[in-house]
Amino acid sequence: MSNDADFDLIIRAEKALLPEGIEPVTIGVRDGKIAEIARGGQDLDAAASAEVKVIEVGDDRVLLPGLVDSHVHVNDPGRAEWEGFASATRAAAAGGVTTIVDMPLNSLPPTVNVAALETKREVAGPKAFVDVGFWGGAIPGNTADLRPLHEAGVYGFKCFLEDSGVEEFPPLEPAEMKADMAEIASFDGLLIVHAEDHEVMTSAPKNSGPKFADFLATRPREAENVAIARVIDAARETGARAHILHLSSADALDQIAAAKAEGIKLTVETCPHYLVFTAEEIPDGATTHKCCPPIREESNREALWQGLIDGTIDCIVSDHSPSTAELKLLDTGDFGAAWGGISSLQLGLSLVWTEAAKRGIELAEVVRWMSAAPAAVARVEGKGTIAEGNDADFAVFAPDEEWTVRATELWHRNQISAYDTRTVRGRVTQTVLRGAPVDFEAPAGRLLTAR
Image (tube, rainbow, N blue to C red; front, top):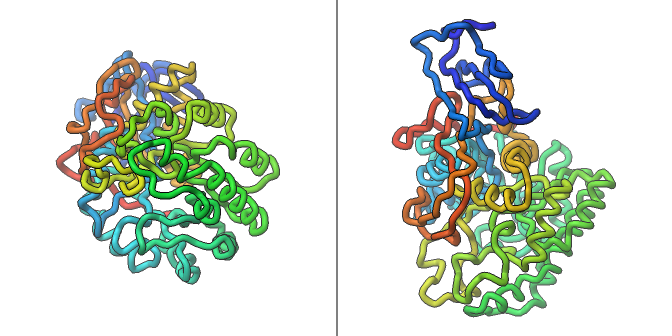
């Protein structure tokens, strides 16, 4: 065994979630990494050095790996009034998220070339309270920028097949998506796709107004189903890795499962709002609940849960897409004109655990969906599990503590939330980033580069 004096931090937990399950551990941390794990109640050494910092996790709490949220819109620089790196990464830390991967759009400039990536990194570096990686963007005309962005360390490339909502990030035609996939396949990159089909959307109703049912009709399931079929066909032809963002339509699960069985390199995510809410319960005018693709019916929600259980859906991420209250049009409640996006970066684990527990799903599964799985999809190294050699990122979680969400108490820059006043189960009580408890006044996050 190592001498305790060799460690910077020791964590003792009666319950720690390891890849093999929950068990008592003592963990030794050195230079921000998990250096040693003693299992089954054993200690690292007979006597701890007085100089070593120690965290004791009580038996009413579980030591989890820090969560990985690979779908976060920080919007900084350019639209930092919507959200910025300081507020977003504080919110992440408060929710047990120790790594985020930032989306390439809603910031100005969007991350569609190396110069824009460098700008974003310069802005993010001094403000990050957790570790931050970056996606690049695939838009019309920037195919030649994809390889340089990959070499500069982005984790993959996001594209839309329908209007993104911001003019500086236009959608790809299906043929250009396939051409970009072929380019991305040449360096084993990943294309992540907002899968709603433009042709289907063109024939759908418009101008929805305050009725949620009318808004739902403007984003039909068929738009997702057709777009996902296009992604599958392109991935089959090019051999590229492809990822479906924020799956909302459970109708697509069968074709996704068939594609995976065929050996196509396809992964899929869904989000807390699709697993918590149902279309039937959303009041007219409640634009806090607007997102694209939309929240669908109760039967659809339950089918998404089944898709997670059977492995068709790989992971759960926030799609944290904030805006100012003004852009949500809370006064008029016009779903057609309001900004689409739900902020949940700080709340994801509690929200998903609350619903999972009702369905008899174990905490280990929830954490795998929200930590190990997104880390694997994005290939974020050293994150997502409590294992020797990984970064010493942890969340201390009280799984049985009930509490009520108050939007005004969240770290999100704009304190409006679809979850305001909702009672949830499970609270993150401490977050550790690379062996140090997160200090919400002193940013210590690092910028990550894909390898």
